Image (cartoon, rainbow, N blue to C red; front, side):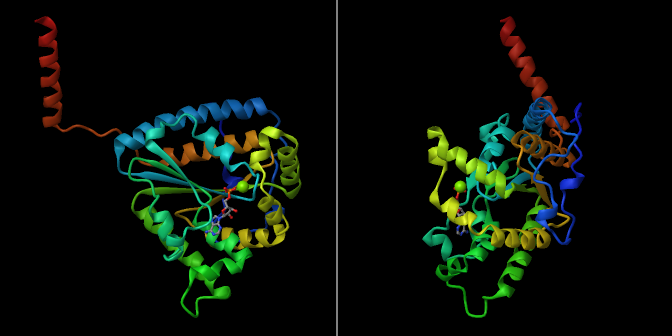
Length: 296
Ligand code: AMP
Ligand code: MG
């Protein structure tokens, strides 16, 4: 996949086990990025690269791709998914959105739910939010643990550390099975969230996007930040690193996400299957028969 543009991804990849301080990480593009046009052009190039990559992923049939999006409300998860995947064949891709767990899901381990929606070999799966909510919203609102009916001795601070370990092991299993796990935290500032909420309130076409719950969660900004920092530091691994993408500029964010996804898929050893001699002979015979038909 050769491309005329080249973004530097390195500032956004979280190396395993650092201390993550979100306050120190950019929510805006670097100062040398000025042009929305440039981002749109780069996005378009990556969208077509992704479309081609998906065809090979499908034909190759040995790998799958799981893309995870986490963010505070109004960071632009939905728009990013829509744009980045716009060139991808819907038959080879599915998006699953994680809301509050169902009664049935609550009766299982928290990694039971995502297991059911994992992409099969050859396919791309997208999680709009994910099992990470179990160490984010549930950590900020520990009363959500109650209906989970955990056995005794599974509460307190230890619980989150154990969940991080379980998540890392889960993702390592996926990686070993041929799933490329690509994780994005879309990093929006509190000011930009406020601006976007106000926009939703001012534009009748965006009213549906606003929920009072979003405003309630905004009151817990600091607790979420703490939960995100702990999670990002504990679950950025060699096999499934986090990317923290500045989200205050939507076009920059979308272009960067598309570029990283295209690059990660490009690193897989994908190829169209090669036919053996017998299969090749079969094709030659088929062609001969069809040509003979044409003549007769
Ligand atoms: P949205 O992404 O705006 O559709 O909202 C989905 C809501 O579901 C968010 O408020 C999440 O925090 C919530 N949610 C997702 N997963 C869980 C979970 N495991 N437990 C509780 N709430 C969750
Ligand atoms: Mg929402």
